[in-house]
Every structure is written in structure tokens, then in C-alpha cells.
Length: 174
Image (cartoon, rainbow, N blue to C red; front, side, top):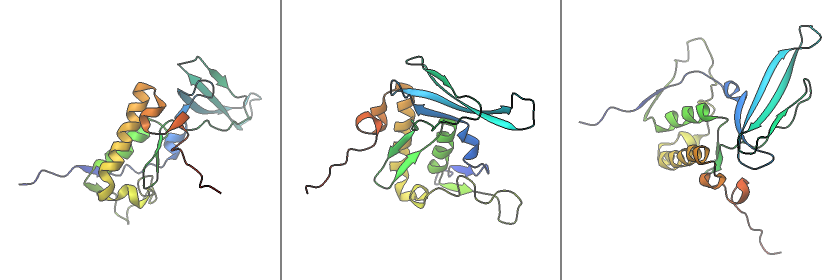
């Protein structure tokens, strides 16, 4: 008798849920930092909302907070690695866990087409190579390397190459 398949039921979330809190590369020390995007009421008491961004690094003590209404460019994501098929990335550990549960499952379920709710969820928008069963082992290894890089704080643990910028690409001689 074969073992019961590992099941995954699509929770119906989009990647917007994970964007407000991300693990990023610290602009000062190149280690893991935490990026938050907060929204709140304006100081003048009007009904407008202003966003505020914050980067905090535990390694070097960096703490930067943007002024309301002035947005930065988010630092590069920490949870990002390349495979021979493409790039795997996640905003935070919760996002990475959702991706891992989806890839590891041999039985993937979602709400029927006639039910109300989102149709194009995060899981539905994943590329075909991540969804493919033949790539499951490789994708799971990459996800496990990403998780290990957060625990160790080592950018090389995720297989990013030098300084975490991706694999080194050599140019062909001219």
C-alpha cells in the first residue's frame, strides 16, 4: 500500500500579504536585515494615508526610517537564489514556508472555479517549472538553502555567489 499523499490546499492569498515585511540585505554590512512598510494617518489629521519604511539590521545596528511620504527603493531581498530553471525568491520566512509546503505536496488542491474569491492567487501565479513534479527535489533543496542562510546569516549559504549578487557570469572574449 502506498503512503498517503502530502496535501496542500491553496489558502487564497496573494503576494501582497507578504510585501509589508521582508528580509533584505543590509545596505551597510551585507547581512540579514528586516524591512517593514507601515501605513498610517497623516500628521495633519486628514484622512490621507502616508507610508513609512524602516530597515533594521541586528548585525551592525543600522536603523533607518523614512519620512512619511518619501519612499525608498527596497534593498535586495535576502531570500533569493537561482537554479538552472530560474530564480526562487520570497519576502520572508512565512512566504518561504508557503512555497515549500506547495512544492513538497504531491496533491495540490484549490477552491473550485465556481466558488467566489480570488482565482489568481500566489500559488496559481507560480511559474510552471516550480509546479513541475520533475523539478521538486531541486526546488526543495534551493528552498532549504534559503532557510539555512537566514539561520546562519551567511549570504553564501544560499548559493548566490560572490557578495550575494547571483552566480558569476563570465563574458565571452571579444
